Length: 501
Ligand code: SAH
Image (cartoon, rainbow, N blue to C red; front, side, top):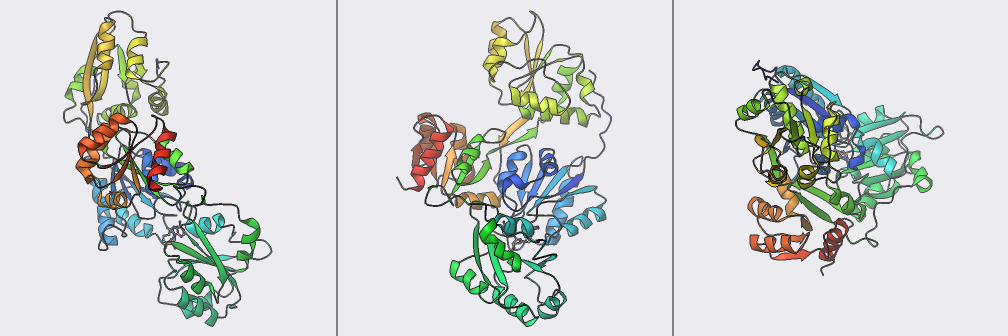
């Protein structure tokens, strides 16, 4: 192929994405795709940080007002969204907002900022907590017999009375941002003509393992909520539909008695890309999982060696990670090219996940080894003798592939396509990390990165004795070791830590 140097058109684009109410399964497929394509992700307090596992490639910025800064204003967020989109040759920004984008999320203001700056954008609606939190509590917002209309309102306004009178014909009321003022709101609703005996329920952290539900009547709900200690984020539902809760209850948040990890936060540190299977195992045991990427990817500072290596290349292209595939396509796109530029090459993927990344871009890997890994790729690659191979990889590539191929007499060349570098932790993630009950370490490099980025004041569990040694050497003192190198054993070790063993 011969890469041209035509300037690429600006990539600047903003996806305003509804992250759903908390359960990471409630992100839409469009939302997931937009995250996968993002260069930068700006996320909120209410957007479950677990969703960031869909975008290990992206720079992530926490812009939630809670736990970060009370002072980051909406105007600053709007400006940041636009500035990030316009950075460099233009970036794809994913703006992840809790629930739905336009339900009290100020998403419309961010869209207006895009319009004002001439940045193209899309809106990916999300599952709003206004409907999902009641639904997970067994409360339908409408029902043919008891409620034919519902309204979603904010408890934040000072309007009170008159506003509630206008809602008098609406059957179900769903109140967001109203826990603090619940006394006043309930009194105003009664003053506006609602029956004090109307059933009411408050759902805190709906759709998550921490979900809590209390019920009462309009007259009692504020007291019940206070006694139970429920705080934001919570929605309150007022209306006859609340009665259905006793019949329709279906979601059981993991019970604290059965499972020691319930309600505990386990931080899973990652020094590799990809969704973490460990998170799934921990979540199944009731833990709230905070995925902490300790590395990030950047473009190689000088891509001319890649362009030179690809020029007139006709052998095997070796791709040993999803990131290599992603970076390869970014490289092509920057040069105004697409997959057709790879037409004369043979593609080898290190494993099925990398092969899938190719498939998502319309390319079928010509070869995938029977067992994923550089060693197997080197041993099994069906290269004819003298056929050239080109490994597009990061500066950290290990020699295994090279050694294996050279031993077979197959010429090997390497070009640095991307860089792997320590990811600075944004203040939001750092604040959440400090509150985690346990931090998992799957490798020595995870231990060293974590010590550098966030210090050693954590209770950590290590995947095996070597990782544990590396953790102690890095300065961690509370180190628990999994009994064997498996995800289940690691989760079990995390349970021992929270039980104080
Ligand atoms: N755009 C969001 C709402 C943002 S306003 C949406 O569509 O859901 C923030 C309020 O949403 C919180 O104060 C709380 O009332 C509600 N909320 C968000 N997530 C929630 C959850 N998981 N459980 C209960 N209430 C939630």
